[in-house]
Length: 213
Image (cartoon, rainbow, N blue to C red):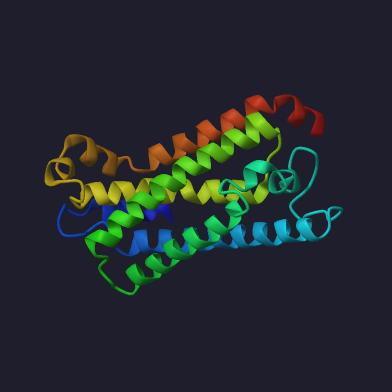
């Protein structure tokens, strides 16, 4: 899906919203839908844990892959009693809806695109805080959380690149060598991002992985 971006919207000349075309619309709609499903499932699992402390979540596979530990932690409610999972449900609902609108041919107004830009950057920061919590504080991995991480990364990257290419940050940025180069190698940063997170997980949990083999 991301490879299609190179052949479609991101290769068009800079102009009025060329990068917010069907390829990016598919990324928002499908990626947002996947993230929404994961957030909804995590919300359900958290609710079941609240009702029954002995409940074993479906995504708790072993001591390392255990979303129950993450869902019941203090960090799972960054805003007090308001679960992080509901933040994910709300955020991915918006992303999915905007993706569908783009696929229907709707041109997103600049204020909406600024809102989406701010949202995806906050989402990326939040995801990396969750990575830190899981890896360094709790010492466990939540499978559905990792699904959320996996879709947030390309969404944040491609929305930012598309906005930069379309001139949302100014024509000087849109016509810069950096943006033009990144449009040509747009998939590389996403892959490097994935490799960095995967390497971190692999190194920190090396002993646990070895014990499971």
